[in-house]
Amino acid sequence: MPNFFTDNKDIVFQFENLDLKEIAAIMEDDYKQAEIYNYAPVDYQDAIDNYRKVLEIVGDLAGNIIAPNAPSVDEEGAVFRDGKVTYAKGTREALEKLGQAELMGFTLPRRYDGLNCPTTIYVMAIEIVSRADASLMNIFGLQDIAETINKFGDADQKAEFLPKFSSGKYTGAMALTEPDAGSDLQAVKLHAYQDEKGQWRLRGMKRFITNGCGDIHLVLARSEAGTKDGRGLSMFASYHDDTVQVRRIENKLGIHGSPTCELQFKDTPAQLIGKRKFGLIKYVMDLMNGARIGVSAQALGIAQAAYEEAVKYAREREQFGKAIYTIPVVTNMLIDMRVRLESNRSLMYATSQWVDLRDKLEEKVNHIKEEGKDPGDLPNRQKEAAKISALLTPMTKYILAEDANKITYDSLQIHGGVGYMKEFNVERLVRDARITNIYEGTSQLQIVAAIGGVLNDILANHFEAKEKKKYKGTLERLADQLKQIRQIFLDSLKYVVDKNDKYFQDVAAKELVELYSYIFTGYLLLDEAEKESRKVFIANRYIITAMANARRNAEAIKNEQFSDLLHADEILI
Image 1: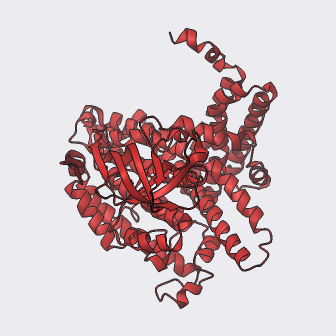
Image 2: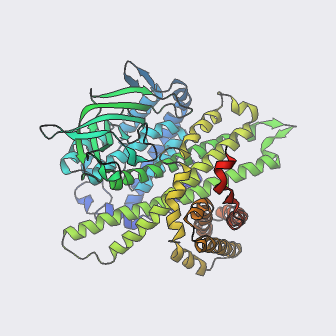
Image 3: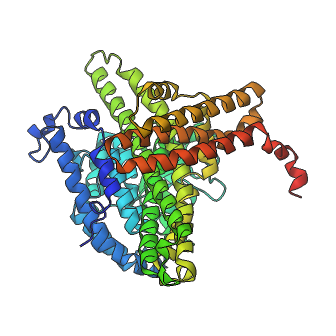
């Protein structure tokens, strides 16, 4: 009986080394919720034990229900007939089991029948589910829609929608993208207006909507007549009733169990979420950042599945009288895959904890202010967490999604010709991975989102503190190499800034963001290596590789290999 939580030693390691003490205390009202709900934790250890039990349930369902059905879900796919979308049989079964296990309201408060878990625990669950079936994650992982209503909706809206999300009765969809408004959401045209009774209504088209057949839509719409930018957009919630028509579902390369719909809203009744004109600049940005964390975890889960397939096949497949696992070039590929997986997981859960800290400190500050008390230094800590989260979220999505594509590609390569055949799971994993560095913002847009924090070196204090730390034994040598990488970054940053050329900053952004990630991830791995000897190998391999890559990044910047971009029109003719 496989369990995709307990059988993954690295995710268990990450779980056992989480620092959620402050976050859990805020979420549990300093554990006063135990006075209201007899199943709420009474202290931090009790909370951690609860989180572990939840993840064990997710791991059991993933290993024994979801994963065995994934090939048939991929083959059957979601079906569109007579204007209705039907999930594959395996998807329906998985959603029913998840609902019965009360796993569809992960981060929602208990008063709405939610599990009241931190985002970090929810992200772990997303990784586990994605390892089993990446397409199911696109339904399971849309719980951020309910969380958005919880954050920004009024009391009546929360009471109306959230319990049904928690029970699994409702699934949702983020209705943002339009035929002419993909990454540039400021170009959204779908019209929101109030009828003679003051009822908001929606009219227009949306395209590429994940789970567009869901029961509740969060819709970005233009509520301010005559506007053309993001300041004229508001957020609305609507039911998927007879006024919402699914015009088609897309015939996609991968994630076949997840229906991607084109929707037409025909004067659909809707409810304004939050304030007018804040739809894009506040609510969608919050929603998208949550979605980017989710896709990062999805990419990590796919990569873990691909790695498992590669190791299994390499141990079983014999060539020239021995298992290909023992052939050095194959062994080296597998080791590289493992190091990428574990370094990415370290980055993923460090980012998740910063996101949790940002959100929970904001809740605490607001609560203290509502009581008329002085929040002290908490607002400053919250602002710092917000800045760091704004950097790490796009950086994490960029790195994990790109690496998921690399790991699945290498897994197929290890399988050889049979990996190209649909009988082997790796073929599906390669197709599923490809979307992760496209949707919820392409890799290129993640770099654009991260470069501001990198140019401002917002982790400078963090890195300086790490440089002063004394590491034991061979780790001190690795710490010295990270100091060298840090200096390479600072020299490269100075070179870029001194040019005082915005265009050059833009074209050098990828190299700088990658340099910054090497340092941050490297220190995460060093700290982990102090806790577990097995991590010394991971840290060593990662940092040595990072040093070589850092020199390459710096050379690309200082040799101005991007200068030919100035002549792109001539080159690309």
